[in-house]
Structures are given as structure tokens and as C-alpha cells.
Length: 264
Image 1 (cartoon, rainbow, N blue to C red):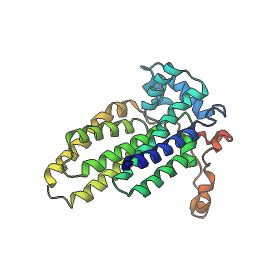
Image 2: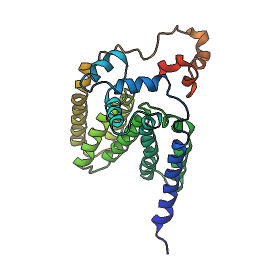
Image 3: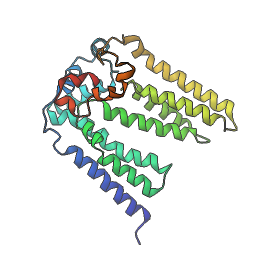
Image 4: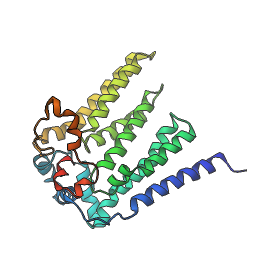
């Protein structure tokens, strides 16, 4: 008689292999486009000069560029090589989603969710682009998974330490990670109302947020916030608001329309 793990494990493995295959297929079919070239050029900067250049030239934290720098030293800077780094994190996102969902949902539901993540066109697209988005998605999901675990009664110091480490990494990859951190603080306040032991848990949480601020402080002092991220555009006004979303490019348009690089 087969163990219960066999069927579930084989299904999950099949989904992961499918996710990997979809992201690997035609990985280097298209030539590098503007933002990918920008990532590679920044990653080619000497490590000690990279923070200063990033703070002047682009509105992103430095961790992805450090990682890409080391990756290029190991595997080269071909189109296939530099995109493969995004493929790795885009594929790892699928089993992580399964692990996270397993704590909240039934087996069938979480397998469907993992399948959707494996097949989602936007996930495949960004897993084939030399940018930080799959790394950011992986770290934020992992950080939120650890956040849910530390909300449980009796969370160990190891979980607290892992949450701090992963959340700090996510903040150094993309500034949008602060939005998740803000949501976590709201969720924490909500759950605090339903806890019996509030004082000690509140003290632990405030201490963790203090350490996160300390960990991000070095980059906050370096970053000048003058990178050209989104160009200035005219305000649409009340009447033009319904048509405003049409001005934003869809994923993939950037390779056909260079002007959309500002949104990456």
C-alpha cells in the first residue's frame, strides 16, 4: 500500500517540473531589452561602487544587483545565463506557495493554487526577465509565511530570527516590500486583540520592527531617492480618470515599446 505522501508528493513534483519547463522554454528566444541591459550594466559595477551608483541612477535597493553580479561571475552574462537566476526564484515560488497554503487550505485547494502559480502567464513572463521581481515575490511570500508562523502561540526564537532575516532581505530587493510590512503590522494589531498574553508578544513584535529599521538604515542613508523610476506625466483630471489605466503598458509591451521601461 502506497504511503499518502507518494501521491501528494508526485503531484507536487509534477507541478514543479511543469513550472520549471514552462519557464525554461524559449528562455533566450528574445534578445535582452532595455531594463535587462540596465540590470546587467549595473551588476557589472564594482561592488564597492554599486550602492552609490544605484542611489543616483535607479530607484531600487541593491541586493538583487549584488546577487546578479556574483551570478554573472559564476555563469557568465549570456541571455540564457542572466535570465536563469529569475527562473530559479520563479520556480521556487511554486513549492513555497504549496507549503504556505498547506497551513491554511485543504490539499486539493492548495494543489490547484500551486498549479495556477506554475501556469500563470505573468509568473512565466517575469521568470524569464533579468529583473528582481521573482526574487522579490519569493522573499515576500516566504516572509509572510514566517509571519503567519510567528503569530501562532509559542513561536520559537528561530522563527522570529528567520522572519527578521527574510523580511530584511525583501526590503533590500524592492521598496514594495514595505507595503507588505505595513499590512503585517495591521494584522498583528488585529490578532493582538485576541491574544491572552499580549504584553510579551507586543514587546517581541516592537523589538523586531526596531531591528528591521536598524537593518535597513545603512541603505536609507546611502539612497538619495532621486533615481528616475516613473517619468512625470500630466494628471488626467476627474473626467480622464476612467481612461487612465489604458495609459499603462501590459506585461511584455516593454520589449515592443521602449517607453514602458520607466515602469520597471
